[in-house]
Structure formats: C-alpha cells, structure tokens
Image (cartoon, rainbow, N blue to C red):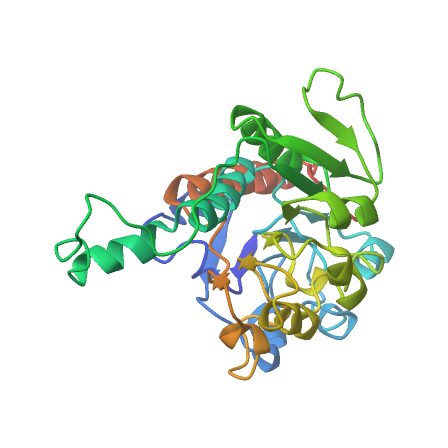
Length: 318
C-alpha cells in the first residue's frame, strides 16, 4: 500500500512516531499540504490520511488508485464522504479518543472564570500582595460552581463526561440533545430545549457536531436570551457560534464571558472580533492536543489502517 499523510504535524510534531505504519506499506508524511499540492502528492496513493486538509470531489477524481481515506480526527466535514461512498471508498474517523481531554478543558475554562487564578497570580508577582494591608485580597468577584446551572448542548460522550464532572461539583445540569436517553441515574439533571438552556444556565457548554442545523446556533437571538452573568464555553466546532454576535454581546456586557477553543476560521484572521472582545479567553484548538490524547488517537488510527488492510474497515462514517 502507498500511504500518504497530508497534514501530520499537529497530530505528531515529533514526540510520537509514524513507524508503525510501515508494516502496511510505503509511507510518506507531509507536515502540511496546500490545496494546490493535494493531487500531485496523492496521485499514486491507495490510502490518503488527513486531519484538516479538505478533500473534495475535484481532488478525489484525480486520485485513480485511491481505496481508503483515513481521518486523524473525529469530525469529517472536511471530506466529501458522500462522493467517496458513491465510488465505494470507505472513510474512517477517530471516535471517542478525546473525551476526557475536552471535558478537562471545559472545566479549565469554568474554574478560570470562577477563581481568576492567572489574574491573581499576576497581581502577586506585580507586588500587590506584598503591599497589601490585609492577609488577602481579590481583583474580581470569586464564585463557587456548586449550586450553579450548567447547560450542555449536545449530549454525546463528551457532553456526558462533562455532566459527570459537573455532578462532582454539585452543579445543576440542563442538557439538550437530538436523542434523549435515560439519565435517571443523575441527580439534579433535566432535559431542556436550547432556549431554556440559554435562559436558565449560568454556564453554557457546546458539544454538538457541526451540521446545517447547528451552524450559527449561538447567534444574536440566542445570546439575547442568556443571563448577563452567564458564561459560554465552546470546545466543539467554531461555526456553531456567530463570532460577531458573540463579540458584540461580550463587549456590550450582555453576557459575562466566553471560553473558546475553536473559532469559525482557524487560524483566525487578525480582524476576528473575538480576538479583542472583552472577557474572552481563547485557546488555539488544543483540547485534543495532550500527549496522551494524541497517542490514543494514533492507536485508533493504527486499528483503522489494519482493519482496512485486513478487508473489514471499521469506524466508517460514509
């Protein structure tokens, strides 16, 4: 098999290894691939591996030897999966590898807003504690998660893991999902509409896939329903949120803050309004990037390649 990886750097910048692939054939790894380079690099490939490099009908039609497309991600909206299916080419993703890591970042954002650790550490380093007349001080209101309402939009494995952690903090949980399952084992849990979550939640966290129905879900109308004291967390997909609407709401004080690991365009353009919005924490799409998480990803990826080579592809999403 001729295996070509088009954008391997973010998955493996050098701290992991691709050597396991060589048992399946000849391997070529590119750190990054521009759209104009895709066809030339893949013209002889039987297996094409991508993370975020788009693969459309135009490119697919110019890959005569293509037999399998393997993703290094869970999301598969960058690939024309329907066209691959027409051609009898399976498309496999990496399911459930980042559940714990994403949930961990959600609570990193939540506790950042509640405890203001960085702000107070900076103040101490600036000498404010040394000059203080009292044994303690605080630069902003501090709050507990206990008793607060967490709204979870999208209740798959990640959303449920977030709910597990929220229970440990004694939070009330509202969840919205296209498929409601039995959650009677949870305390302080209720199913709710997205409108009810907007109106009632102190913290709102997004864990829904990007679909025509969820694109722009958090828009000006949604944000107008939110409490002024509410915080929005997005670790799902950037286009679920209307960047301009959120920036306007933050700058006008219509919501208290936002923690974002994803934006509508990545990397963001320098004029993205969220980059200068008030009370907005932004991380560069790193919820999945822990060493352990990426190692787990490559383990599942190896299973996908082996299963295809054995004639029974798994984790097929088209």
